Length: 115
Image (tube, rainbow, N blue to C red; front, side, top):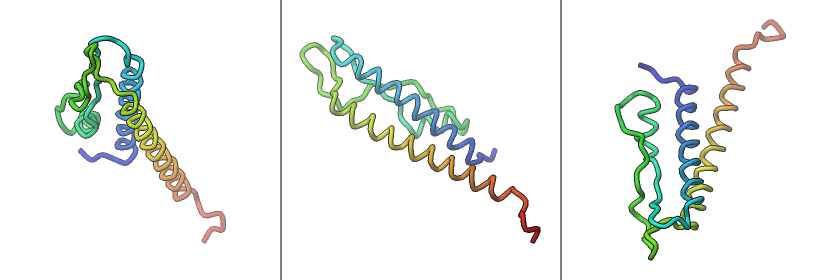
């Protein structure tokens, strides 16, 4: 099965959206006792989205957090950095997808001069 750039970048945007929702959920639960931050591994989630593997896209607990006295390991600083990086990746993917489709439409238009 051949994956075109529209399928690929559609999958990238879907995974990035899922990560945005998980990061927002982590931030919302920053003060919830015993809450552990979750994330989805991007590579595995993209492979599953494109159908190339049977990888699991279930969110996984992050293992880099420091657990506080209330059992919560969400670091707002870490979540803000992850949100910013994910947002920039969404912006870059959307810009590339927009420009690529605009170039494709331009290439498919007939030449107005007829040459």
